[in-house]
Image (tube, rainbow, N blue to C red; front, side):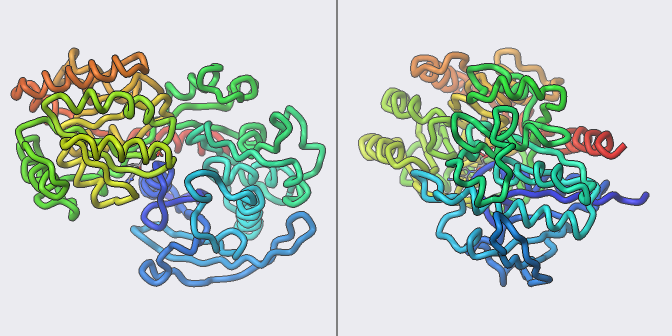
Length: 473
Ligand code: ADP
């Protein structure tokens, strides 16, 4: 079969650069599509990317003119795990300490930086004639408008919303800097509460839109989860689809994970990882349930609930390990709590290997998110046999079934669900988890079942392929 070509654009891609789930998806979805398409993934060549280690080489340079200013763009390339990668380099976009900015706030000129990234992608489409470009989040959203504006580009655009809470809103002065005509500064296009909103460009001008779970696709049409864009999304809802994210089942597999002290394939096999992690963190009591939290310290992830509830959880017979980084006030509160309680340990920072060890060691994964477009942690937790304890929102609704209704024949994973985002409900779910843990046989059968569930891309990639095919019909 003659494979079609597909350009996949993202502001972060594992293993080159990662701040969260977008990087995982931008690595694993192209891999899942690779049998059907020649996928080329494009991302910025940030300073932190290891050019030598990944054998990244310069292939060409070109000029783009944005807002009357000419920028020199250097294009780099490498091949990694069967996928072609292109890296856009320009000092304005790439020479920074952080990708988006320090934890407190994004860089002020992010509109200009990712505007330039979008112009570079549009230029790639002009030069190489890809039939489809798959654009991810606000950082690439402007490409949809640049494509509409230029009749010489025949590429169809698919825009994926990974998290509606991050929209890329900037002072209107950015319009002239990114060379976008004033006539697009309207409610029907980029204007949003007197700001220029990049996410709106993606919604308005993409040929098709997806978001990362069926439930989130419905939620974002409501005022509770729509972040002010629910009305605008409703106007465009005919082109909106919810497709559940998957995980890379090779990368997230305890059967051959080099980060683990001992690989395993069932509930019993987790013991060595648990003992190893407890020792490393200075925690005692391998027979007590171990709860882990891995994620960004952000409002979205329910950190307020955690901060309020942890002192009560600490009084139960259990251990708690936390890993993450983000808002300083949350880090400070969590750090104060962990200093106070001997059975809570906080590791601050981003540590891929430690996260794998924690999924492997954990009996339960805490995920009290206030909203969750899809969430990958709960699916990774299944693979490693940590039972998720989750709130009932977004992709968590689509991926976690109540353990009370456990059914070995079900293709779904099971966990503990609390439906109201209150400290009381979280505490009650944790208490139930401890009870479940003490019913060893039942607990192990749930863990073993979850570990066998398929949360890879195999089904969801087919849904993306259907959309691509429809776009170029
Ligand atoms: P997000 O909203 O942050 O994108 P997701 O659940 O979609 O959340 O994906 C989070 C991904 O980032 C998972 O692979 C998770 O294991 C990883 N992760 C989050 N925080 C950390 C951290 N501090 N160290 C290592 N991995 C992390």
